[in-house]
Amino acid sequence: TWVDAVSMTLALVGVSMPIFWLGLMLIIFFALALPNWLGLSGPVLPPTGSGTWRHLIMPTLALAANSMAIQARMTRASMLEVLRADYIRTARAKGISEWVVTYGHGLRNALIPIVTIVGLQFGTLLGGAVLTETVFAWPGIGRLLVDAISYRDYPVIQGAVLVITVGFVLVNIIVDMLYAYLDPRIRYT
Image (cartoon, rainbow, N blue to C red; front, top):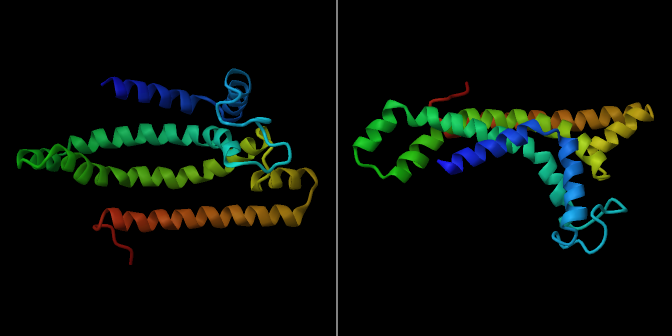
């Protein structure tokens, strides 16, 4: 369908565009083309590092575009594979509504590889946060880590790496627990 073609084209653009470039293009677009569209009466970027929720829109878009594009492509591929399975054909033959077949049976089984990619993308988001925080002059753990490396502040480097590592491990544990919830056949002993 045309929705599929448009979404996959946007996903290809999202995968292809580097985070820092997308961030710069968003700044240019919202500063020049649509300066008041976000409701920012003052500067596009907060001068002091603290702003309103509207100041988070562009960094969030820049950081999430790549991950959303990968998720869209993975979801499409996984759903197409699951919807060709025999049990889906059997459910349709039984007269179950298309909504229940697609979302109740199909999406639930297609979520296993999608959840895996979500867990792995968390590390990419942490790495992309360094670039996003630098482009948008937003203080965060990525910016803290870069500044600590440039000043050779080893305790801060160790602390930031520890926080990032604990976050990544916790996300992977949550992903493993979601496997058992999504597919009861998966058991951990």
